Image (cartoon, rainbow, N blue to C red; front, side, top):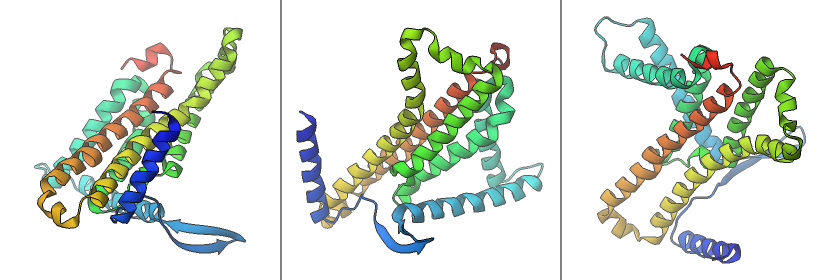
Length: 254
């Protein structure tokens, strides 16, 4: 099947889903003008705002809980300590002696992406199904990679692109492709789940959906929870590996 026929199939499915009430596209809610520029508020902005508020509230509660930690921890304290320990071990296993410098960033990115990915369970359109969200995350990683490269390798971080000279174009393309591949991987996987669930809700009559709720529940667990957690882990793991590849060998070993 060539690209044109694939595009035709997708458009047909989209039309069928739209006629059935499915909605997996970004919606423009309102427009406003700022400094002479016309801007729009979309469902992505609303989802991002809700996710951010949830994370801020959770962070405040977690900080208060840890500040008043009890000798015999309660359920919430156990939950917070479990998350912290899990993320500490994940970062330490890859970044070694440099883990403390990056654990806060990696942990924040992991939790943010995970909550964005599973937000579909609560009726939101996952913000990570918008390329405008995943690309900035990948660009931050790109900056950190080259910051550490210049810090440890100095001018050698640039000169290695020309070694060997014949492969210089490939080396440069490989560096530029890093943020593109990371952002597209996350975006594509989350968008595919969003589209699949949108098509199912649009193509299956609502009356039948009421009897198939266990099936929809399993699909939501797979696309939102399982796939969402995997993609958050993969993004953070690639971030750590790309950053750590510039560390001296003795610093990577824990």
